[in-house]
Amino acid sequence: MNKPLTPAAPFAILGAGCVIAGGLASAAIAPAPTPHGAWAVAYLVLVAGVAQVGLGIGQALLAPGPPSTRLIVAQVAAWNAGNAAVLTGTLTGTTPAVDIGGAILAGGLTLLILGTKGTARSHHWVRHGFRALIVVLLVSIPIGLVLARIGPS
Image 1: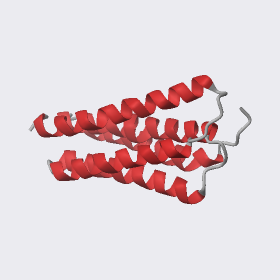
Image 2: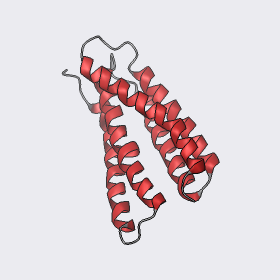
Image 3: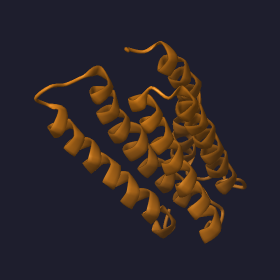
Image 4: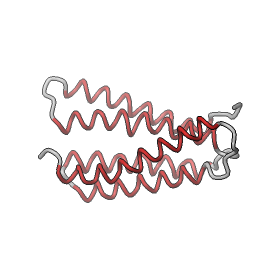
């Protein structure tokens, strides 16, 4: 497991930024929390932040060779654009933006799966953890799209 984590750097940097943004948002809404505000904090920290770091590290450890810069840029752009659309759409009540964001996120996850294609059979726990994270996120997207339509008004 002596692979460099450099390909994970953009995911880690932006993911950490999302975790920090979630903490700042939490501090901002603390005096008068709202359901959408609390959701946004959790989303920023867990999905945009922690999941992004896990996806980047998982790919860096599992990819058969270093992913191309172009692939990493596409993956990071898709993940962050999709999350921005979901957050904006949810907070403004614009469900088409949430739908577009969900589609972009699914595309980003597909790119991450492709980035680990041809993974060696070693690192079983990393491979299973990475796949579990992908599955949880893929299952969460349609659930989130439904909740965006029926959530608090």
